[in-house]
Image (cartoon, rainbow, N blue to C red; front, side, top):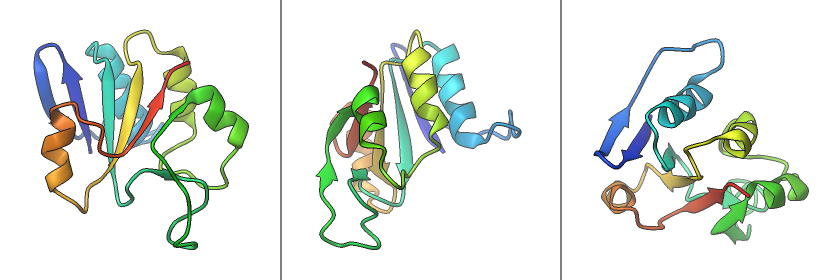
Length: 124
């Protein structure tokens, strides 16, 4: 599931379309087609970490990062499909996506208001 943000408001999206590319890339492409500037991924982690926080509780949190910096770091695990980096790098409308923790429902409303509550991955 993802959140669509546009000048017309925000809404939750869920889709079985584009099954051959997976739900995360498909929802990103829908956000791009709708002209959204941002895209939100609802996951079971607070955002990006230098190492998997489930394996290392002392993992360093990454609050904000660009596509090129993320590629350069080549993190061993990501909470999203790596193809999203290519999609964001080549997107015309979407300028960033935010990863928020769906296990903390209070973050959803804040994210819908545009607050920084997870990790923001920005286009270069």
